[in-house]
Length: 210
Image (cartoon, rainbow, N blue to C red; front, side, top):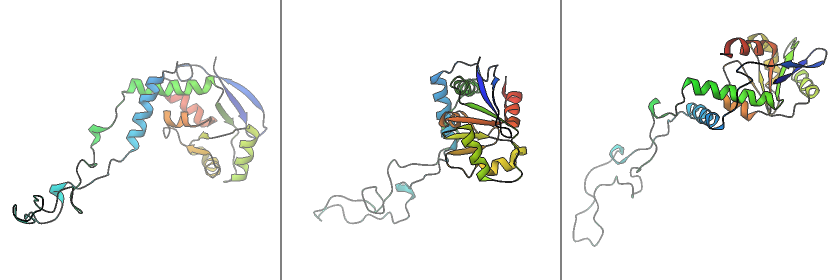
C-alpha cells in the first residue's frame, strides 16, 4: 500500500499515512502522462505572436521601376518579403482555441492519478499536521523545511485557511506554493517532493477520488 509521510509541524513527530484509492493506486502510463503535460503547457501559451504579411504592409502598390531597359531584375511594389520593410512570409499568427492540444477528461484524470501515485510509491508525498502560523514567517517555514529534510524543488499545496503558511513558504527558493486546482500533472512531476497541508489533503481526497 502506498504511504505518505505525516509530519506534525508543532511537535515534529513523524508517522506514516496509508493511502488508498484511485488517486494513489493508479498505474502510471507514460504516454498518457506525456499527453497531459503537453496539453497543460500548450493551454498556458497565449498564441499572440503576430507578423505582417505582404498584404498587411502599409505602402504603395506602385511598380518601383519599369519592367525592361534598366538592367535590373524585374520588381513589383515595395512590399515583398525579400525587401527591407517588406512583409514576412510564413510568420506566426494568433491562433484560436481550435489549434490547442486536447486531452479528454478520462485521460486527464488517469494522468493526474498516475502522477500522484508515482509520487506516493516513491515516498515523495508529505502531509503536514498542526500547520499553525501566527503570522507570515519565512524563517519559521525554512526551519520547518529543514526539519522535514526536504531537498526541493518542492510543491506546497495549501487552502484558504493556510494563508499565513502560504505567505511564509512562497518566499523560499525552490518552493512553489499553490492552492487546490492550481496545479496539475506538470507541477507534480516538476517537484521532487509534494507537501500537502492537512486541509489541502482532505480536500484532495474528498473531491478528486472518483
